[in-house]
Length: 494
Image (cartoon, rainbow, N blue to C red; front, top):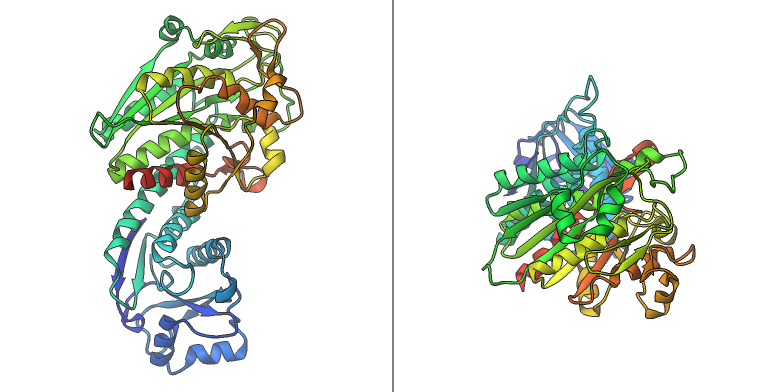
């Protein structure tokens, strides 16, 4: 889909569909008033009859209005300006593109970005681009007869006054984020028999070929053995698929600038290992690599933007399978840090690959390290499918991430990382055990990772509840690419 910005009078625009807003109570937006004048009060009559109340996210499609050049006009309810929230704004935009995609229009012109949909025009444009991309995304590439591509191909954000120069920049950034989210969703939705660790490595190498600012390196199991990654390798022992440790180095600033390191959990399929998961919905464990997918999507987005920042992506990726060679509950392994771990549950495997990747990240002399993982079902119980869980060993970093989440409408919630929880990980036989019991499972998982991140500022994002949807809408969401990219944009701006 192509996006552009244009100034112009709505009644004179040639478009497959012109979109204007109506506030609750029947007040027409400025663009709708201009159309109303040209159409001899046709819109006012429609509102007076009650066909369009202006209720937030309501829509009404009109055809061949007299005095209007556009083929169609879509009225969109903007609700009450005094009650507008980011959620309502996003709902309005999603409803808009849902209605547009139900028409045969190939192009549309939206007079919404400065019409009361949101308080900030740049924010509205970014959210509109993401809503448009989401509305046309398809995950049916493996079907013998995929659905026809969406008809809508071109979106113009129209303004009555001359648009600010910053809007074009916001539009370009949003398009890059949408492309990164699409990559993340594509990878997440692929089945485990296709999206293996080797497949992810190939994708990372391909990304470096397209974007010369990225350098990709892939370490094999023999390399990890030399590095002493006994914790990571304990997870992959039961699989026939070889594990990979992928690094992507993006240089957008002077090489003397310390990088921000993103570490993404890449379990391409998680059976639970010997601690086998229940069979119901086990197919969704193909999404256990969404942390890795979000790192790849974020790296693609910032490379497309040409962000003035140094960023490193670290992706430990493998399968967690049961076999005669698989790690058993009670086994003790030595991590790259030298700390020993008693593995009481082989389904708590994400932290076992992440801890070695976090130790490995020190080699990049990082400014900040953020890991992203579909880590615990307990996080889903705590926060549902709305917010991702966040932990940090520095309050300033936590506040930066919280602010970026609000900006991007990809929200997170901070949970405690208090020392009071650490004794739950104590082991009689090793330096620690890999689970802390049922209570506070999300917190004790983060506390486990914290033992490997004491030498740099670090945050952990648990995206188990937000990386994908179940049920009829089953599919990867692309989160937290908007959050990560917004955080990096903010850092580059400083």
